[in-house]
Structure formats: structure tokens, C-alpha cells
Image 1 (tube, rainbow, N blue to C red):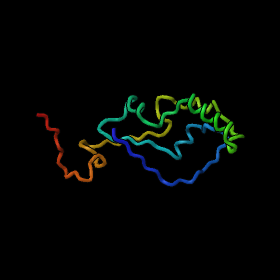
Image 2: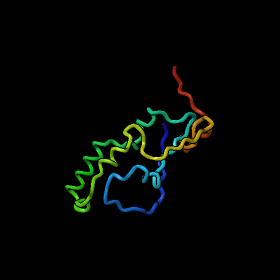
Image 3: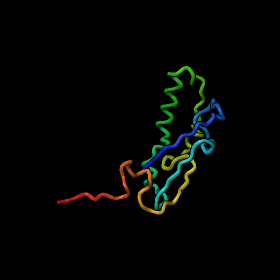
Image 4: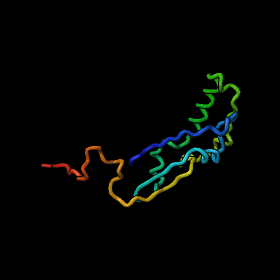
Length: 121
């Protein structure tokens, strides 16, 4: 799998007094785009860094609330947190089919279009 991240400056449109936000709020700011010869499978999703593990997120938010003065009045919403699926990314997933071959991002700067084969004596 080849992965790329593109980040654009985006003004924060909401200041949350409650975390985790409802999953529908993430669609306004994050999308996950897969490209390749086949759509992503459940096994592909396991390799993304976009999964939300309820216990880990709850522990992190609880730690922040106790240890960081800016989060002291934070409300932790277990209802919102439990709405996230632990097996799929909580954002819009878009799939773009490619026509095969290596994507341009997989080529080195010195690649002249010739695929080198490994020589096995």
C-alpha cells in the first residue's frame, strides 16, 4: 500500500466544549481517499491510522482533562465516542480507480520508466 497525506489550511469552524465530536462533524474537515485497482477492503482499513479505539480515546481525553488546564472544563461525551466504528475510519471514504501500473508517486526521481528486475544467480 502506498499512502500520501495532503493537508490544507482550514479554519476551525467550531470550538468544542464536548469531545469526541459527533462523527458527522468530521465529514466537514477530513476525507480519506483510496486509489488503486480495487476498492479498499476491511483488511485495508486495519492498516490506516484513522481508526478510533474507544478505550484509547477516552483515556487520552480523561488524561488531558486532569493534566492540562485548558481542558479542565471539557465534557467527555461517551455517547458520541461510542458512535465511532472501531473497524472503519470515521470519515468519508472515497475510492478512485487507477488504470494499473505503478502510481507516479511510487517512482523514484531517478526512474527512467524502466522497471528493474532483481537478478537472481
